[in-house]
Amino acid sequence: MNSYVGLAQIIERNAQIKATKTAVITEEGQRTWAETRSRIARVAQALSTKGAGKGDKVAILAMNSDIYFECLFSIVWFGGIFVPLNVRWSVAENLYALEDSESRILVFDDYFLDVVGEMREKNPAIWLYVYSGTGKCPTWAVSYSDLLESGEEIPSLAHGGDEAAAIMYTGGTTGQPKGVMLSHLGMFASALALNKAVGFEEDEIYLHAAPMFHGADMGVSLAASLEGCAHTFVPFFDVDTVILQIVKMKVTTTLMVPTMINMLISDPTSETADLSSLQRIVYGGSPITEDVLSRALQLLPHAQFYQAYGQTEMSPLVSILDAKYHVVGGEFLKSSGQAIACVQIGIRRSDGSLADVGEVGEIEVSGPNIMLGYHNKPDETKAALVDGYVRTGDAGYLDANGFLFLADRVKDMIITGGENVFSVEVESVISLIEAVQDVAVIGIPSEKWGEEVHAIIVLHAGQAVMAEDVISFCKEKIAGYKCPKSVTIRKEPLPVSAAGKILKNKLRKDYISS
Image (tube, rainbow, N blue to C red; front, side, top):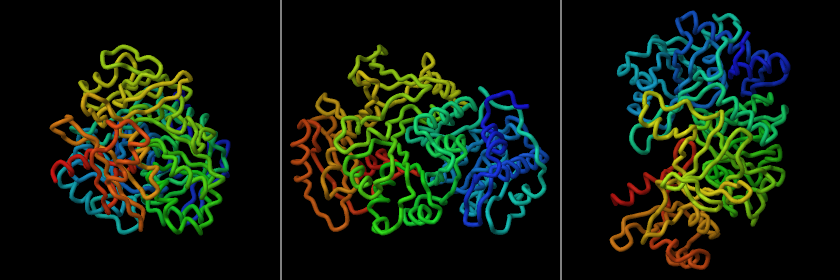
């Protein structure tokens, strides 16, 4: 009997009380929670017979799929720790993650057959490769389908609580990527709090549109699973494929970042497609702009929007902005909401003292969903975990009612002429210009000011705007020192991470080197 709070309990409970309800929907058909439990348990047993044991790290390099979903639970079923690898990383970056995490098993699909073949030559520590694709299994790997057929059902191991469930790697935009160690209890607490905040219902169908290796999809996926929602998948975010999947599978719920929402509502297909099933959109990465929200509500009048703010280090949830605050022109639209049920938020000045209400400082967070630390990085762990709080590296403030307002990433804050400028504020203003599709604001070197505000803009097709018009528009809305001193209008999309976040570090590098 499992006496711990563990992720495997989600599957065990659903198989017990929702056995005949749909768990997974694919092009091939549907599977119930009872069938899903059986598959997870058999793969776990088959891996165990091949030598996998408690505490072993199992890496996954694959696109979104039902097999990915099953693998996550099969790994914790036998007491392992899953290590999702970034599908956008280079071979060198993922080799680093494999070595740093001390992974010994690697699951991969058709998309990464050649990549894993190359990685195999450079990392002899992996002793078992599991091919989860649909083609011919390489001779040096075992196929997922064979594991499934050969395995026998076993109960989940008594495994959970403060024991590690996952090592999830951060982006590594500054220095080496960090492996964030997350516990069963932490991920369970975050999922419970999100479920409470959003109120999932068991008849919902959740679409995995964001990458499954990312903490955001992981958090929403677990919360939806707690309620017994069904899951469906697209391999990666492609707006036409997402629209088709929503229509075909009658998707009710999904997770996106604002750039994905913008792509969805800007695609001409969305105007004629039947998206009426879509009732709930959880988004994160940044607050939604009024322009995007207004167009989204017009296209999807029945959908509720929830902004989730978090970090991998918090398993990943920190706060939620409820759907009722998503009103065009509403006073809380720029807020990241209030702390979820299990979290406490604080704001610290640079000298370590607590900031006053309304005063900008570094956001710190604590709760049962706090990370265990960074794998093999005691110094970085010590710097990030202070007195039971995670120092997030985000700047923001709390109002009198505990609504959190993000000012910026600390590293993205622009200091010009001794004044702090928060790029998100300037981006929010520029996004109100009708011709603007996407915008990123960065600081660039200035002999006079130290840094100056620079805006990089992508326009809607067929639209035109002059740089001086953008600057003039900003001067009508915000203080002069916050306004862009220069503007670049580009045709190519802004660079984004696999999770859909704009890569400002790349923009800064490209601009400075140009």
